[in-house]
Image (cartoon, rainbow, N blue to C red; front, side):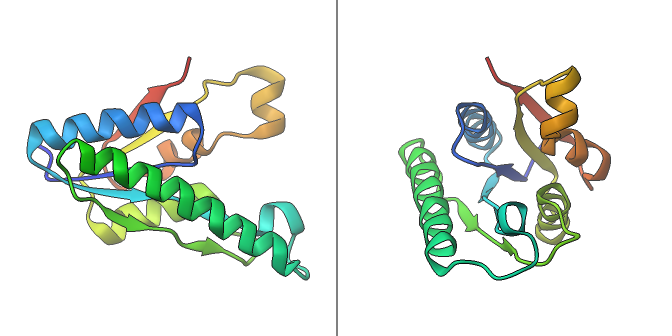
Length: 146
């Protein structure tokens, strides 16, 4: 049924649950798998000057998250495609980028973990998953965290 499954990861336990579900589905469906991690430099520093050490540390974290995700897929017998774009201009959001990546890659399923925050926590922190739900160009599987 699914031929191109994309999963967004950020290194959290919740995204790891989403990754496991995406790997299982890709294996079951004989589908291609793309793993994405969006680096959002703007969130912390705004549109001004970025300290080089912060940017490199953020990139290194992204490489570590992607490598751990790749290893999990390979151990399950799947060789995934990897993407890690950077947001460096204010006005863009991680969810916008995830939806665009899914569109560009022609994903027919997008998998994302959700923390299921409610109330004040959701208001203050926001929800990438909630925004992706509104923007996704394809069916979406939300995997709820603990």
